[in-house]
Image 1: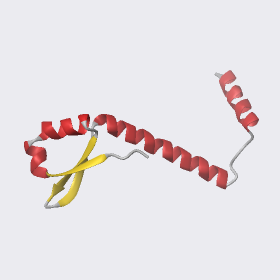
Image 2: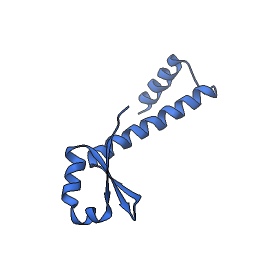
Image 3: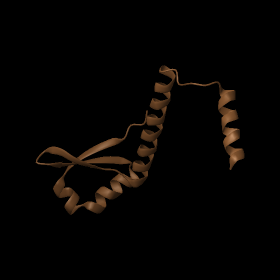
Amino acid sequence: MISLQETIRPSADLRNHYSEISKQCREQKEAVIITVNGRGDTVSISYEEYKNMKARIELLEILAEAEDDVKNGRVAPISETFNDLRALLQEE
């Protein structure tokens, strides 16, 4: 499992030291938790980390759906699946 390092900083730092926080997120691959009045408010991560995290979540959702299909008997033999795919491709 991939673990993202975290740093906690007050909201004033975001306002006063944005470029430093941005660099920290990008170069050190850290998540920066921004607090307001001592409580977590937002999280800043690099765009690259965001895309990776989003892709992992989408994959997990697909796997969860597949697991549900198996549990509920919504399965077919692989040969039948490939035959269906071939038929779809020939239609195009």
